[in-house]
Length: 548
Image (cartoon, rainbow, N blue to C red; front, side):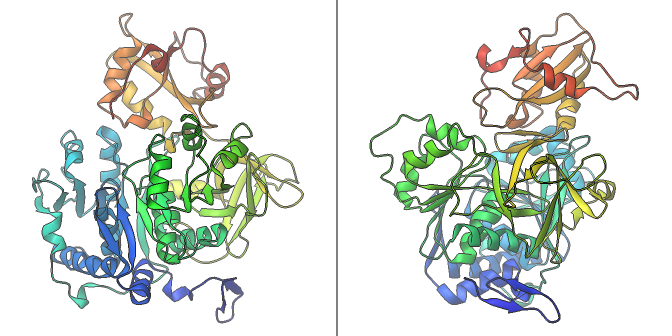
């Protein structure tokens, strides 16, 4: 069990560190002092970091950021694949008391434009191969002063100066460039999908990020004797905070793949000797579709954190690979307040029990917010018991922050229930939110792109359930055209250059009109209920291939 620390005049919090050390710079420094040159992290491209390397190299980059004018509260945006550069940029930004803004590497067009305008970063760090995404958007008034290019010539973005990442990484560190931070200081913005509007930037304090790591380690029993395999993108909280930060906090060596591949998943696990991994959404089902081998159990894994789990494959996954599945429930806004128990058998939908040292979780009537009884399905609402283990709000979207907090509870928009033993079961979404391939997709943003087509009168985008989607959604776009010549492939061709691949509709249905309520709102539930009709176009069935 972790040691117990008593805060002055407060309740007991079970954690490994006093709260004053719940910051990324403090944890990095502590682990460098404890483990020194011991290997910590290996990357797909051969790069490696020891615990001491992470401290010294991030100090050098922090001094480089200081030289670029980065001050406390400034935003440093990263459009980076999983890499050493991503990790160093994050830690160095935190050491400047600035705010790290990792964004999805597939963003382009209006999706990217919105996040830049909302965050107004002073510096952007970009993989050279992703730089083209910035060429189609207007950077005027974006606030970007400096572009830092990884793995290529330092070609500046419009209106900025440019540097090569390795040039900055060679800066001589100065102690005065590392600024003291507290657990209550904002350190990261992660964007999550909007439903009736653009994506929202979740403003995360250091304590919020620390709780991610601490709770993951407590629930998975992660120690320095484990090895972590990361194949999910670091720009998401799962890989960045649960896995990477959790491994750092535990002193566990880590391997970071460039991206998830079902075909190489097991061989990668064996090669790096991983005992723990996270495989969420449809990832386990993709893995199970790989050809079965007699030696599938011959691997070092003891645990996979996987959500949501289906009765159709949960136990099969455990038995085939000789491991345990652990579940949980969380959102970027409040991390993971509910964790499974390794002593419980895997059960579909069962997220586990509330970490009640830190959170309160209720099931309430979504119309009245009145609490509901055991086994009654309602909306999952959450609030923190400990300061700053929750988001500080949606960045520059106060109205969205207020909308989410009603009656002193944060409303998740998810449906669930508690059983008689106090275990939370996740059922489905309540709000118009689409979850596809591990990404939260904003129906609003997809509709904005489709509606910009000159031959589209209006559109409505919803998530629909189909076989083989692992409990997640496929995207259906219902479109009212203004021209008889408009077809589904023309719509997809329009979308491919204007939105990330994960947001592209799979299904397209043309309609004469889209039904609305008396107040003028589209009746989206009716579209979801109708689902995929015989006249709906399916890009997978039609062989429409979207390049990565």
